[in-house]
View 1 (tube, rainbow, N blue to C red):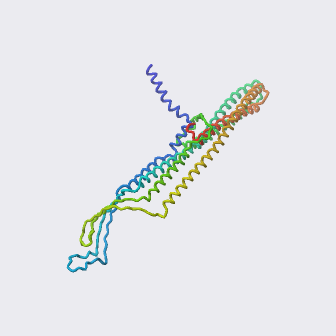
View 2: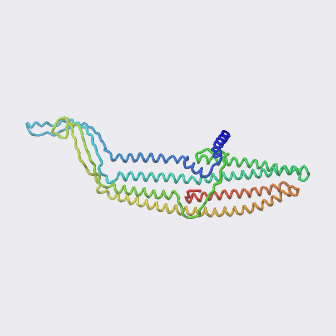
Length: 421
């Protein structure tokens, strides 16, 4: 008994992944496009690039080494005009090899300011990447809900086909009993063939949409997968929370970091240096021999006057900050306009759905009457098919409007920046 229960439990657990693979949700598509879209790979590349650039900046704090060597020949050299002084004139051919070391001691915080610029630039680039991936969600919406429309049309067509097949049996029975015209079954058979063609058309359209969505989300999706209808909650309000707003703020932060860097670039720089070498002559020009030598010291570099270049650069940066403020206002304005349009569409489709539901109730009453009339030979099969088709088309309109309402709501949430469906 225990063995049997264990076997059943294992079999049940094995079927869970199969069930989960038989359907896909809109949220899963959002997650897949953010992970698998080729642009998503830039995130790791940007971090790697920033790390290398920071390493380069850090090298400015390390000693800078410079090795040089030279050999020269002088056409004339200094001679000491003192007889019997014992001081020889230097050689016309002279040689020198030196190693110079420069160590930055103080730079007014320029190096840290450079690192800050790189880090803020990385945050800006990462947010730009997030914005680009976020904007792909509307493409996912369009494809996903188009597939849902195809799926609903297919299901409604199946219902219509089943109704016609059941009616065909009744009509053939009526023909045998002389209650229905002999060719009535032919009309229904022709309609069933038309439905077969519609099935093919819907399948091909859905297959094309699924292939496009698969390419977008970076995952193979089978044509047999069931696309679930999402439950979308929309809060109709004017506040927006889009990643673009964060991007505008990060751009301003990046400009502020650049301004801090410019403010420090004209600070004096204190540099320690040491030179060591070997040559003929050495530091003493009166010694006509190869000698080792060295010098050590500190020096200050200070660009006292740059013709206001630094000041004008900072003024230009301030203008860029104002430009970003303008871009932010334009984005907010356009977003609010789009939200108003989408809200109008939500109201429109909601009204359509109410009217569609009322029409379908009436159509079902008419079809019920037509079924009775066909059964009693009062109307032809063509008249019955017309009423059945009218009901099918109105049910199609209802399901299409319901899915279009979901699409508009999903686009509204994305436009507003709502985190959840």
